[in-house]
Image (cartoon, rainbow, N blue to C red; front, top):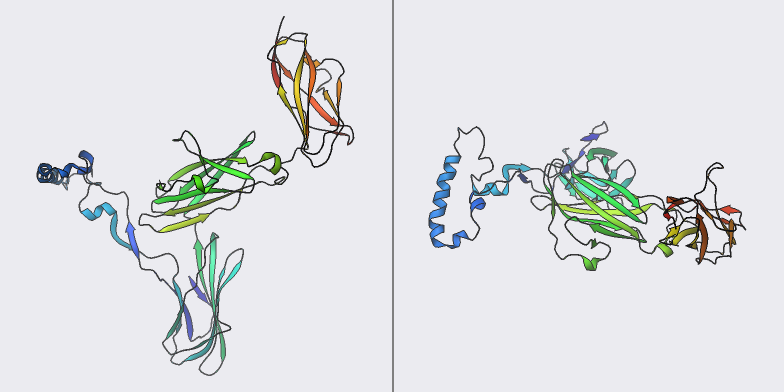
Length: 432
């Protein structure tokens, strides 16, 4: 849609198409009945090549009875060109080709300064400015054509703003603004889900086709953010294919078809920190996982490309101190002490400690089934930056069956800080 400010002007802008119309492809594709019954090499036999086509042709003619209201022949080839799905119609190209400024008056206009801009909801981009080299003149009834290019990266309303500053026949300097409004819609929608299981993050991407044409996905690759590695998971493969390095990619991958009018395809990626110990400090607090790069082609090979925005996951928070259980005895007897092997790791760049390890009491009336055997507080020495220390904690179980070790807590005696308790661990207590 074009709009101009009121007033009489000798010039007028026109947005023209540069490409030729394309063929309109109308699915579903049709087929030859011979393809269903015989192989492609059947006609290598001279006898079959001479007798089979007339036989199939006679049967096909019977099936194409116009009185058949079941439309059972709607998928059959009536003409060899039907195999390509051409409907006989042409489609005008949706993209702009070039801009033409026309002189509709009976006299020449001179010293024309032309500007072209794209205006979106977020920004205004200059495409053309002839201020330094104005167009010398446009004769009566003539025109001046120019091409502008813009890589569309935003959805929604767009406005192509074309302006001309020129000298009219009487020498008056006139200003012509003209606006061409259009809406950019996404041919694809990408919905993502992020799930984190322990130290592994899973990203599911669902791609939906909103166009009236089948789309063939040439490339759907996830570009992970720094310190992340990505692996695509496929149901038909025993081992996932690494997507983080180009060396492991296939030379040729058949495109994936996403059908027109709402067809979908799902992709699943496994994300891991490339080096959890060294990268944890660098990615602290960030929740950027990466972005998807998608390229496709239509039925007639017309290319398309889409890059998503950064996909966000759960923010990574740094643990200053991490306490974990390394080993628990396989046999634990009632009222007999047993040793639990633990590790305390310092993830900071400074020395921390000394520490105290104890069992916290969740409730004053709650009876502990597993308690510390001996002194209720164990003192640990300082732990150097990015260092760790192993120790053993003596416990005793006071009840048979499945019990929980709960509330193992570490405190920094220097900073007067208590860290999150160790997650509960189940054990089985037997009698002697």
